Length: 325
Image 1 (cartoon, helix red, strand yellow):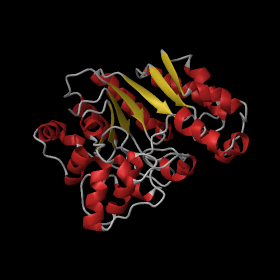
Image 2 (spheres, rainbow, N blue to C red; image 1 turned 45 degrees about the vertical axis):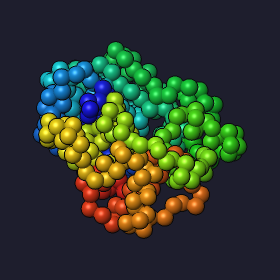
Image 3 (cartoon, one colour; image 1 turned 135 degrees about the vertical axis):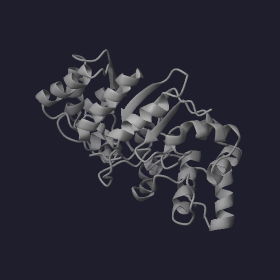
């Protein structure tokens, strides 16, 4: 319980892109970054776990503050915790800069990097930047992951030196096929802003369709989770949802073992987004979207958006998430 295998350290939600699929609503509107002392505190907290796990240093776009990224890699190395860095390659304009930064990270102990490649990133980041990052990364790192490689060819067929609007996919393939490419081909999760920006290309179902779909696995046993710069322990891919404060990780784990959770988390564990929506409708006037929802995560986010301005619940964090749709 609360023992992820791949833990993300979110240095900031700031990003030069505001991708339509982003689960954490990252973008240019965010300003805060994790303090260096907090980076070390986060790794100190992680070190209390006695199971095997790895850390991905992420954002936002972590290369926007290269000094803090270096500090995070330094802290991971000092703690003996395997880590890799995620990047959208938007900063990879000059080969000399890419080579210099990758070399520095290798010196600090980094062995792996993940480079994003998708139609959503390509709206603001030319494919040439991704290619440059991928090619040079092989000079320095033991493992270089392109996520997802099949999109590289599809993007290259459209343009390499300029951004590619999402509308161009609809023009080229039609709305139905483009929707399948996005939702099934990429494996989109309808959390964050994805269901709002891309929901017109997906099938939707009413609230009732998600009855009985509780979230205990996602919240309590998610192998992929995050610590963010505000102290939030974020489960699974549930942007804007906080289990508690990672500064008190040991106490937090004990509390969950005794089923002592924030009210909103408890409702999701027991009744899932459907149960949460029923309570929100009765207690706080939530109204079902007449067009329905792309998935249970869409329903969850929509209910939480409604509640975020009406109730005080520690689980609704960070608050900035609810202002960046």
